[in-house]
Image (cartoon, rainbow, N blue to C red):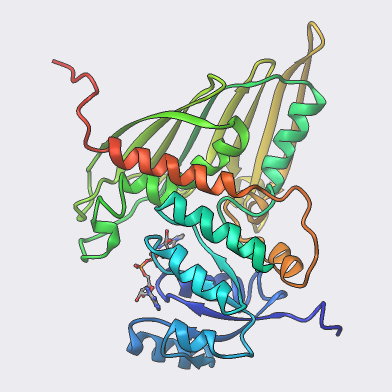
Length: 353
Ligand SMILES: NC(=O)c1ccc[n+]([C@@H]2O[C@H](COP(=O)([O-])OP(=O)(O)OC[C@H]3O[C@@H](n4cnc5c(N)ncnc54)[C@H](O)[C@@H]3O)[C@@H](O)[C@H]2O)c1
C-alpha cells in the first residue's frame, strides 16, 4: 500500500458523543476504511481507561500529550463547541489535521481565524455540518436548480426530531448561554447549514421555544425563522418531544420560483431494504407550462450531516477537493446561532391576549 492510500492514524478526544463516533463510524463503519484509531483521551481519566481497554487502544492523558506523539496524524475532536477554536489552533499548530463536529464554535471571529490559519499551514479542518463539500442531496438540489432554471429560493421549511428523556446534569446542555434554544443549537444546526447552502446569506431570525417534557432547564421544543438577504423566508423546527418511529428525519421542503424540492426519509421498513433511504422529489415547470417531476433515492449515510471520511482522507493525503465550501459558510452558521442566543429571551414577539 502506498503512503497515499494508508489509513490516517487518528486519536479521538471527548468520549461522550465521541464513543458513538468510534463505535458506529471508525471501528466498523464508513470511516474504518480511511481511519486507524490509535488512541483516545478524555478529561475523565477513569472513563478514558475503561474505553481504552474496550477498544484496545492507547489512552493519552491529555490533548497535549497527543500533540507530542509523532505517530498521530490527526485528531478527532468531540468536545463541546465553546472554546473549540482554541483547541483546533493548538492541534493544527502541532502539525496535525482535525475532524470535528457541529456546532463548530460559538465565536465567529475565533472560528474564522483558525480556519484561515489552517489554510495557511496546509492543515485540514473538517466537520460534519457543514460538510467540506456539498453532500449528495444538496448537490442534487443544485443540479435541478441549474438544469431546470428554477430561479431564486423563495421559502424553505426544515424539521427534525426525536424523543429524549434527559435530566439536568450540570453540563453545557443545561446552560442557555452555552446551549441556546437547545433543540435548534443541538439538532436544528443541521437545518441551518442546509439552508445557508441553499438559500444564501442570512439577515434576520426569530425564535419561539418551549419546555414540554425535559428535565433540563433548557428548552426541548423550538422553531426558528430565518430571512435571507435575497428575501427568502424559512423555518427550522427541532424537537426532543416526538417519537413517531422515524427519528431525526431531517425533512426539507424548498420552494424556488419555478419548482419545489422535497427531501424525506423512507424508513427501511417502508423501502423494503436493510438501510434507510432518503427520497428527493422535484416538481417544476419547464418552459411555460410543461410539468416536470423527478425522484432520486440517496443512501442516508450520504446526506448532509454525515462525516465525509473519504474526503478527509483525500485532503489529508494532499488531494484537492472539488466545490469545497467556504469558511464563510461555517462562520455564517455561528452568526445565526449567536443571533438566536440574543433573541432567545427577547420579548419582542406579540403575546396573544
Ligand atoms: N450527544 C450527541 O448526541 C451529539 C450528536 C452529534 C454531535 N454532537 C456534538 O459533539 C460535541 C460533544 O457533545 P457531547 O454530547 O459529547 O458533550 P459532553 O459535554 O457530554 O461530552 C464531552 C466529553 O469531552 C470531554 N472533554 C471536554 N474537553 C476536553 C478536553 N479538553 N480534553 C479531553 N476531553 C475533553 C468531557 O470530559 C466529556 O466526556 C458537541 O459539539 C455536540 O454538539 C453530540
